[in-house]
Structure formats: structure tokens, C-alpha cells
Image 1 (cartoon, helix red, strand yellow):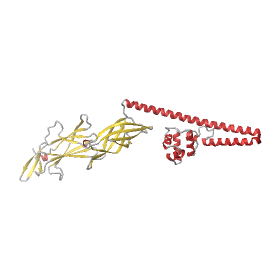
Image 2 (cartoon, one colour):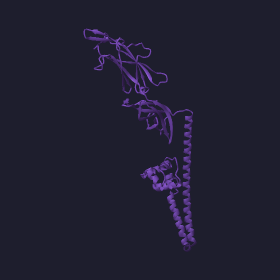
Image 3 (cartoon, one colour):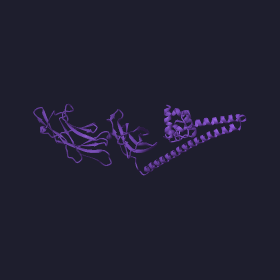
Image 4 (cartoon, one colour):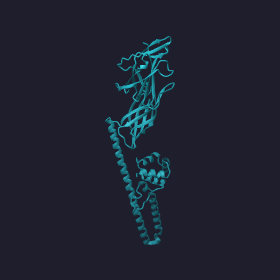
Length: 394
């Protein structure tokens, strides 16, 4: 385990927060955080203070506690105590010099020499491990710098980390007295996937920028929820990737949110068609009327925003207003779809017919209410849009 992991595990074992431990040893929380993340190394004095505050040895923090079973584990605190004992022993030797004689001095000197040799070995081992950690840290920094340089080179060459992105409504359009708005979700698919990557979405509108945490999906994409687009506003979107402690930003694009982006447009009669919608009325008896359409086939063009996928289009014929069931309903088939110009909107053509043997002579009609078509467009999410087209008398 690394020095940072050892510090973090020892702190958690003591039930201390970063702030509490940092205050104990007299450093900032940010400095302690860098030590735990292995992005910076504490000095020897701070190592000693950490060990004292956590109640463990420096060698345990450095991960060398059991590196050499033949040499007993010694912490810097223990080393300081032993050195203090040596000083005390030397004072005692001076006091006993006149009494004990040369033999006692030789024995004591031999003992102190053995202890000093042991101390030197321990200090040498600690210094070697500290140097190894510094070397490992330098290697990690070099590797990280190489990754950053590679990413910067890719950006300069025009390469992108985003393969695709889009926004989708998660609810219908809401209309207030002064504005219209819609809750949306933004989805981002990176070009490559790797573990340990997190993402945040930055949404800028005017001078205001909001950040949203993104959730990773099993397919490798990321999604941000809780976003609201207001009709008439422009939003600049970018994504912040974080991996191995390094954060990079990439621009996604701009959304000019307007009414056209919230609902489909219905065009009666596709381009190039010769359909002529209308009706005429035939009087039957004194107070009865029958209505006949001038064109039994119907054809509409659905011009939809990119997020919407029309699944079904139906047209009701209403002869007596909105009361009751429609007189007849035509379920239309999709003839095909396409995009045009630089627009991301999708056009699809739908057609069907009202023809029925039972209504060959027309439908009963009150002769007063204006007849109309009501078209219903249903998308794959089950949302429904309607539009009316009054019929004219021929």
C-alpha cells in the first residue's frame, strides 16, 4: 500500500476526519488531502507528527514495519527516546567515572556502540524507504504529465473524446404566465470507455453556469438530469471528464431552445401532392343532411424535432363538434422519412383513407357545425400532440 493509503487507513481507524487530524499536526486540510491522495509527500517532521497523532510508528506509515524481520521495528519517536536514554547514560557515566574506573567505561561504551549501530541501521532503512517513495512519486508525476501532454496533443489535432451527445425531454412543455419551459436530460457518449472516469455537465445561459453530476450507464454513456430549458433561451453545453485526478473540459454545442424544438409541425398534404381537402352537403328530406368528403385519401407530413420519434398518426373526422365520438378515424401508414438541408429535424410522410362502403353516400350531418379534421401524433414515449384543420365547403 502507498504512504497516502496508510495515512488514510490509520486516520479512519482512529475515527478522525481530515480536518481533525490536520489540526492536530498543525497543517491545512488541503495538505493532508494531498498526502492521502499521494499527490504530495510530507517531510520527515510531518511524518513524525503524523505517527504521533495516529499512535503508530513511522515505519508503519511508510509500509516498512515488517520489511526486515531480523531488525526490530523502530519508530522515530522510539528512536528519539533511545537517543535521550543514551544522553542520560553518558551523563551517568561521567558521574561514575571517578568511581567505576576504566573497566565500567569500556563495557558501557561497547553497549552504546551496539545501540548506536542498531540506530544507524534503522535510520538508514527509513531513509532508503523514504527515497523509494520519492522516486515512485516522481515516476507517477512523469507518467501523469505524459498523459496530459498526450491529451493536449490530441486536442490540438482536433480529436474529440465525445462520440455523440443529445438532449431529450423528460416531461411535457410547461407554460407559465411569463415563460414556457421543459425538463430535459442530456446524454453524452464518450469515444472510448475506461474505469474510474467521472463526468459533470456544465450548462451556461448568459452569465450563469450550472454544473450537474452525470451518472454512468452500463453502455458507457453518461446522463445528467434535473436540467430545465426555457423557450427563448440559448444554452452552451460542455462536459468535464475527471480521471486519475486530472480534469479536462470539452465543448458539446449550443441549444437555441425555441417552440419548434418542443413539438412537431403538421403539414397537410406532403410536398408535390395534389390532395384537395373539402366537403359538400346533400340535403335528404326536410331536415336531414349528408356530408361527403371531396377527397377520401388523406396525407400529412410530420416535421419533428430530432429527439422525437413519431410512432403513430391518426386523423379523426368530426362533423358535429367535439361532442361524442368522431364520425370516422383513419389510421395512417408511414411512407418514409428524411432530413433536409442543415436542419436536424426529421420529416416523415403519413397517408391513409376514409373510404368505406358504409359511407359511400356520405355521413349524417347537422348542417350547422363546421366539419374538421383532428390529427393525433403519438411518439415512442406515449406523448400525444393534436392539431385541427377546418374543412371548407366545395
